[in-house]
Length: 214
Image (cartoon, rainbow, N blue to C red):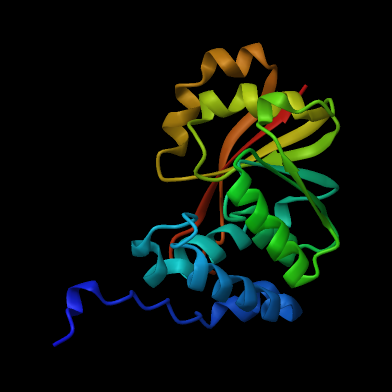
């Protein structure tokens, strides 16, 4: 008899709202989600408990932030491509730089960029602190990488004057701002706030910390 406790978790069915969020790019979103669901665990990109909530917790949670971006945007610690690849699918008019230090994750990112035919994505193998391109990005994002106070020194130096940090965070976002007062002053961030996105579209809005870099 099969050990049902060890059965492979089932990937979450695609929510109806996915087609609304991705529009004519939904087939690419489906292809990426299927690839991540099929290979993400074995390649150390996601845990097995994430498969039953892959669309809701990861894909759509990332995608609803897409309208916030423009220009050339860096994704620090891109990992499995969350949010960078998802955002690149949703916003083909934006140029995305996926910054990731781990070789196996960089390989995955290159594979997906090729498989999905994304011509608006550059993959850079580096730690954010080793970025040598200067403050040239219009915005930098990150998701599930680190606390805001830790992210500021890693992300703010990559952004041009007047650009933005647009960081996808959890329910504790407001408290993270309070704990980052020293770094906010040091890196001259202004208009720092929490902005929920996807309210009324997905069941749990995505909380985004936004800040202008001066």
